[in-house]
Length: 449
Image 1: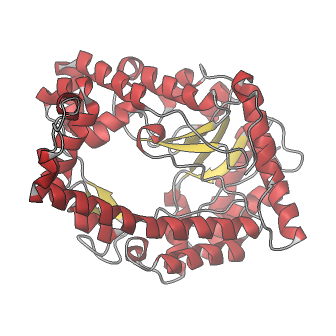
Image 2: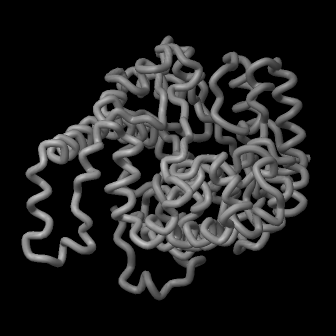
Image 3: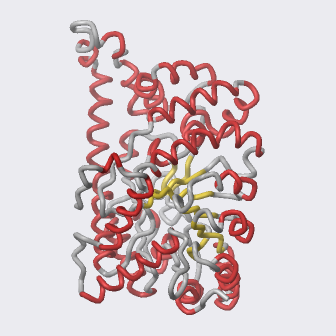
């Protein structure tokens, strides 16, 4: 681990970002397999750094092609393996994909413990091997619900910890029902003996025991994923997946409110029925976002999946009023620490590009799903690095020539002057080896016109 300098808090965001990128490219602390692997890592990391900093790449544009579900399918590994005890098989499949295709980046996998979620009796997810088939096309499906009722805004805003512990968690996870019997710490915690008596309740004891066992189970896939990523780095492949910080640090406040508390339907109704409460709740969520504490040397990229801010979810005026203000502030929490947010703009963000242009130059990388990349380049070309947009439908059903031609157009238009990373619009689950090779190789062989 590289130590931050004593004057870290006096540095500008730009100075911090430069130091983080320097440390990332230097690869200090990585035990490479060979000197050639170290040289490859530094070469590829420099390509990505040049793109992030809007420099014209000296040789070519870099590409980011996550093996994803396709890497598992070609290895005969079902999506159930991501959830239950075969995480080593997942790791080996992704390592084999990296060796076979030689992409510019290594990619991890979102492994979870199905046993942990079963133990808690989770109600906001379905997953392969439990209530989805072992070979489900997706390892899990999110189930939105009104886990926070419309008349509970004030409880959440006034005492979020109490609300989450005693209302939200037991409502979302049936095995945690006993948490409802927790005392209200903000009152009883300041009275002598006020909190101890509640912990004698058998239902509360059971809920706490479930939480402990669930935490232990959830650590198993995390450790395997961590070891796998270190193995891929040792082979010479930097990770562009970014830090997935999770929770409030990994999502827009509006998305946290919609994804986890009110649900899409409830939140869209609230836009018309209780707009002030939405704004107040988003500000409360923003205030709870922890300051990032990422060591130097770790990848400075922070992945931020965006779910409800695209053009189809709300109007431009609604985005400006409800979504952007708190999300922009949350981005600055990361930017001010020299970190580089990578918002994954799921859906279409054509009408959001002018908002993105408000951010400091070279401070973010925007990962677009279905956004018009020509327009994105026109608006953001001198503001931030962009990536994405190669349709996964084309990668799944097209042929190598079609994939190559589509990518060449993106490289010609978006790659001119730098600031572009070639990438699928999202994770690739279905394809052919020939199409994947076409996607990876075109970035290596084709220069912007």
